[in-house]
Length: 119
Length: 106
Image (spheres, one colour):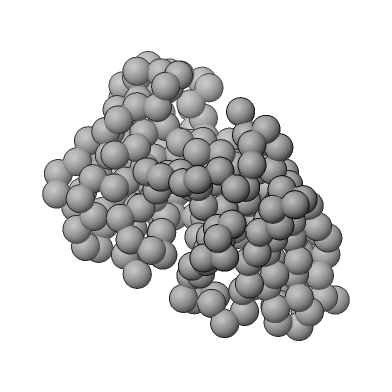
């Protein structure tokens, strides 16, 4: 049973870069057919898909965030990462990492990490 | 982007009541819709996929249905542990999009 765990700073200053890592255990980021995703959720609102990355280097980002987002996979460390630049208070949210399977479903989620953007 | 319009924003019901939540897609998404249950401080948990298929282990009182672009989640007999916020999500096209949620109070 794969498990995902987000890690990173809970506080980021405005205009800086948010950096999060999702540690994968009980499975490999190189397993065929899976895409490694990030979803965020402003408290009290519906979730928002940020994008996915794949161990092959393929990635797809939400057009609304595309200019500020970069995702990558580290196969040696078995984790994947999110970087979001030029953050503002509107980027304050709980960030989840998730695994998307071949049926386009999120079949495993991390517990989430609250990231607050504030000076 | 495909917009998912969910209603009502909240519902208060009694144990044993039937609860219905709806979600309308702004364009055709076939049956590529999933329903999540989310409790405070936890990640969303998928209950139904393919509009009407129940995930293993999900109580059968949860049922999903579809009529063209309109999707419905029904809780046949509300239980105290069903107190949560429910979201729909389309996975027909990127970017995947979610509804705004329905808070169910018992």
